Image 1 (tube, helix red, strand yellow):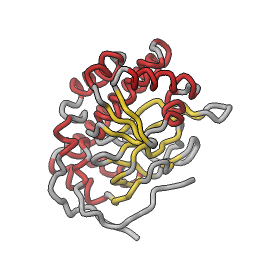
Image 2 (image 1 turned 120 degrees about the horizontal axis):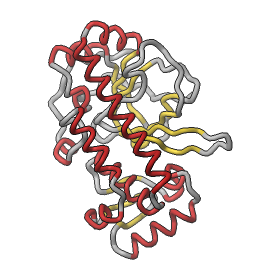
Image 3 (image 1 turned 135 degrees about the vertical axis):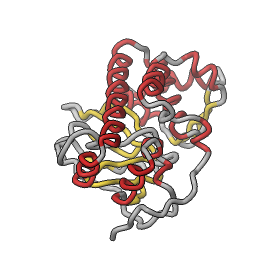
Length: 265
């Protein structure tokens, strides 16, 4: 299994993750004492199906990971994106349980991680921390439910537009690193289908592409072409964990340095 390469103490604040930032100050400080900084590279695997989940990972800033179900023929289909609004692995469960899906770094950047044992200890000691992570798990489950419905009911064009918009929500960047082959794999469809969608969007001046990068030139038109799934997920986040789902403002702003996160060799 490929894991994130450890880079030592990062001069950055774990509160670049909105879920950590939403904690009460005392819970935030206790969690930050147990966190380790890590640097994620695109394609790094956090864990594979069946692996024991020994850590929970918190993407910060523009970093993003995704959950992918591995099919019998080796193909993978994405079920959820996770950026600075959330975490990956063992947030609600107690102990080191096996993973069901592959968790992989989608966009590179800063992550913080905490061991499953430390996280379980912190949850036992704080009902408010445990409650917040339980509410996040509900939001993540809602995203998975919506993804399943989207895959069954919406066109490839709608799903492609939805994915790009979801990535922009989490990165705050109108330019993302993404090839047609990668997008086809994420959507679980053939590359030829995605190619036709991309060419149509380019012809209508909605997007532009260059050397494995995709740029949004008309976000409003892209939203009109997308399904309603992102809006429904955001609405549920706002009802359950208001302020945690990414906004344009917190995509641009990095909070001041917070020195409590420890570094381990």
